[in-house]
Length: 198
Image (tube, rainbow, N blue to C red; front, side, top):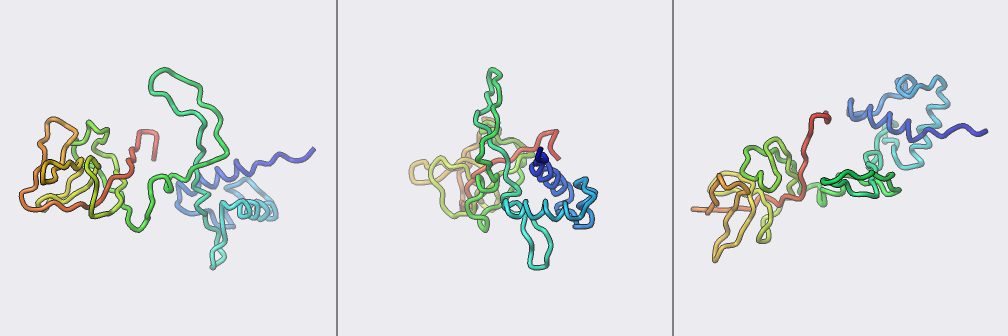
């Protein structure tokens, strides 16, 4: 009987270690982290993960994670916010979250949200918006803009011959620039951390 392949379990152990330490364990520590006593078993595992595209050797000979290392499983079923449903098994098409939100890394920044002027759009204080830097945006786009010298997060709306910025909270006024309005970037994603995340 052939031994059970536990490479996926070992990969997840390395992922958890990386999430905590922001680095892969040294070769000397791998044995204790992975529960291996034989150095040959450690080396075989590393080579299998390398062949599968999860890790790679750096020019200095260190092991480093690849983009595939950070992929997360994608389920077949969408989660229902109404009545409960069974979450199906994951597909064979994992997703790299970064690739979903970031089209151009050199133009993308994360900005923390302060205040509640956009709560009607589901954006709350403490969230992080993923913003792609650009100088123009279409009518109705959620943007970060500099208005009369101050930065704000609002919906860009074209009114007559001018552009305005609309909040998603009736307690806040529509911003009509007195001097200048400069688009900093377009919001392309939202990150929210809940109690269980660290």
